Image (cartoon, one colour):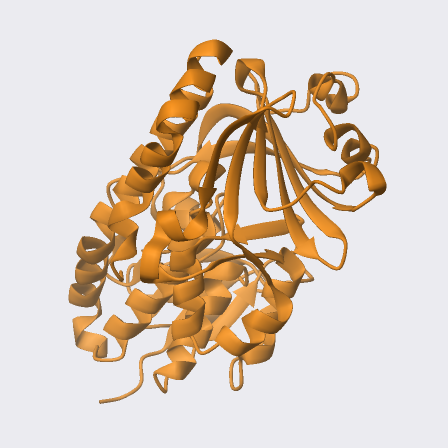
Length: 369
């Protein structure tokens, strides 16, 4: 059986992990990235146990252990620092394994260095894709592929070109991400710790090791643009260590939160993966995990696929992934709804049912994809 010609559009987590998975199955792919350098914006990542399991399956477990920091507990506090719930990770994930924190740049470096035969062409965009798999690149070059994989994020050019009716939906939240250095005032920024204020205000800290802390802050907003003035004023009144960490947030990465929830990710010779297919709220930290799982499932299916059976393989891919992705989208909505309850009701719900809610959110994800 002749090897498939596969083009991966996008060199983020989804695209690089798919390239790695294909190499692990003795296959190869062309990878193009529209930006002139690899994107590492976003500061840090909390990877839940199913994401760590996927990276282990990609053969990256040892490298991950060297670069990442284990996370053993989730803590939920109100904005004054009063504990609402404390949950050991093992009570959420059981034997699935550990959760970790890692900088986005470290994860990208790890994925890139794991590739042996795959070459990444930077500064190369896709401008057109025909039904027969003929691809036109930004420089005018044309090539034909058995499969084009859109791994180019929430604002996917592949999705716009081939799936014209699928646009991101703004979730009514905007966020900032940054990495801060631990100071004496932030010494208690341990574990995965979220601090919940009124009207949906959220401030999350996850230690990355070496005295660095990944910080994520979001607020509800009617518009997908930064608010007037200094955004940090929205977190006035939050207890330590938030004030000390915010002092280091001048260059925080801003983003509106959006979702892609469409019924169809495939065409006969095109498939969407990762955020291009199913971007979601970060409430469960499953965006990266779902991208990694997509890569493993798609690579496994392609390993036994001929050029003549690509469309059947894509249908099988979508059928295998659909229910799991839909679960994550629905659970994100459920968690965001709880977070936006009036503060007294939210605090009561989390004190008496926080662990039960978190365990229920993740239970179906214990099974391998």
